Image (cartoon, rainbow over all chains, first blue to last red; front, side):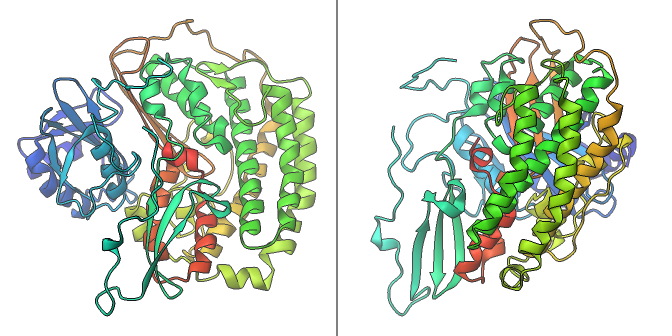
Length: 152
Length: 383
């Protein structure tokens, strides 16, 4: 499906979504509270069918956090990028690990690195950081390593 | 700030006798275990010999490469990517170079493009050779390891002559190649192809046809195509379940659409299918190299780029097919000389997440076969 068709289809599903076509793929900005419902639709809708979540990450923009989901369809081979802006102090968004099982590990990584709370996640624990990690989330921009052996 | 060992100290988590989970045993495989091929820690819940749950603990070789890259320039960050998936270092470098070129909108000379593909495919063969030898060794056959290294050594010699390194090459840079290829490069590669073609059938005679080996692989670690996609599995691990996911075919880069090769698919979904995909893929890689080695165009090996690269403001995503699957690099640029944020989507991380699903209900002794056919490289998982 081409970008124009995708846009019309997604606008039908979610009238409040805004689009950005400056990049390689269609970017969709949605509010965090809409994410779970639309993730389910993106996955199950027969003519969208985004069944492959190939990248899930977060960006710290200092004033806010931005969740970024890269989705593609193994049937139609179209790609989209979904972005959702989260609050800096108490970031939270619904988990999608029951829709795309790969999100389980990716969300755990974002949880420990950025401190994003994934609501209803089945197993939200530290994955990479050692047990008993205290202090700030390492991938946040304001993180300072207390040891800081080599400053790059 | 040192990591405490994660051996279970809290005995209250062990279930009481007679209740749910009675008779379960929890064992630790790793962090130092020969079958994990690196520092991976698996906490396995067993009932008798049957696996109930596999829980990977990561981070023993986490170097925070993504954070490091935020303060490295676009020429410098290539060097750390070689150290993620060290068996596909050329292909990782290739992904970074492509992503930066996408931002700069530089056209790479055709000579560089062809050499890049040849090097990628040589890397893929070398990686699969090491995997084949190591996996057979995990299953108790020591000899294949030496057979595999006999051919892999020839590739390493080619790399050493042209790139100056045998493992972490850093040869593919934004704009083209670091330097021109060695004058002997073409002859050496042709010699290697002759050698490889005469030896590759030995692999089947030695391992693939072996009845003990087949009994240990067939029907072990099944994963369906639907689950493989859901777990984000890519590369030979997913193609063993019949998922067409070869980035070289789907989203061709640097002229992969101009060479003829088949995407290797096996429908079985078990360890043996994943094994066969890699064996057949090596032959396809040779096929690609054969088409290109005689037609390396003359000309520049590098496009003219500025000494200090500044990417325009925006986001760039590039994916390539490494020996393990889809490697993605996501650069968020603010217009400066260093990236604002980099995310590496490593194939091993997603492939590992499927291990728990695959292993449940299988026997502990088969776990090695499953891990072997996922082809885990731990620095690639931890980043």
